[in-house]
Every structure is written in C-alpha cells, then in structure tokens.
Image (cartoon, rainbow, N blue to C red):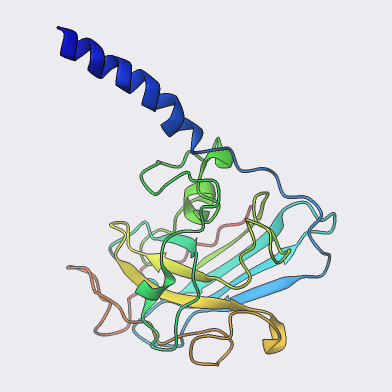
Length: 223
C-alpha cells in the first residue's frame, strides 16, 4: 500500500513537469515582407513531383503556403508532409532531414488536432492543414500562423527541408527549401534549386519504385 502511495506521489510530481515541457506555439508576427522560400521535389518519373512555396503574408503575420504536387501513388495515402529540422545532405537520403520542426516540444507522439494548431508541431503541415489523398494531383493554399521567415527565430524554416510520407510515415520524397534564384536557402542537396534525388523505401501495394504512379483521379483543393 505504501509503495503504491509513493508511486502515485511520484507520478503527481512528474506529470506537471512533463506537461510543462510542451507549450503552445505563438502566432508569428513581424515576418519580413517579400520573403519567399521554395522546395522543389526531385524530377523523377516514379515519384511525386511539384513545389512547396512559402511566403511572408502582406501583414507579416504567419506565412502563405502554396502546395502543388502531382504524380502521387494510387495507394498508401493519405500522404503526410512535414517540415523537418535539417536540410537533406548531398547524398539525397531523406532520412538526413532528422526530426520534425518542433521548437515547442509537442513531440511526434502527439496527435495533431487541426482545431488547435498551436498545440501541434510547427512543422506538421498535413496535421494542421490536411493530408493528400491517394492518386491525386494536389493543389492547396492556406495561411499558417506559426511559421517564421525571420532567420534565427524558433519557427524559421528557410534552411530546413520538406518531407512527404506515406500514411504509415515511410518516407516518399523530400526537398530542401531555398530562396528563388538560389540566394540563401540550405545550400545542400544536388544544387538544382533544392531538389534532391530521394532515397525511397516503397510500401507494399504502392506503385512507387517501379513504374510511374498512376493518377486515378484529379483533385484540386483550395482554401
């Protein structure tokens, strides 16, 4: 009985500390106007291709995100996409991206609720704004209030990478963010505007790694 009481007491002591390690992400204000970063997926016939463009908003609050991805597999979705902490190195291995951008310690174990995006990992873009359906050409635009275009701030993403995953979180493809024209950005990857030759582990039943993915329907999403 005494040991149970001690265990409960220890849990009560540790729980507030554990919860306090995660804090809500603040809404980003004061982003420099005109800042823009682009991640261009590798031009590979058997992989998704397209761009992720993230720009400062006109009022400097948050960022404007434009996603345009095609040639998605007919199975294995809904596909997830996240901003990861590191740029992809020159080997092109997407696993070098490291963990998700998570300056406020939400952790990957936390299930993101789009109704409370401030509690999600800052880099969990599909968690906050929705995943990508199977076999689609996907276009979406939205404002994300929690990313920064100001270098040196916790939510800055311009020297990081975007990684696209299957629903089971197996990596599908990836790219580094760069500034248009090659100025700034990660400086890693193949040197072709931030795209890398992704090292991919196919998922059983998907068309990735063989012939080009079959697009079974066209879905255009706007927000």
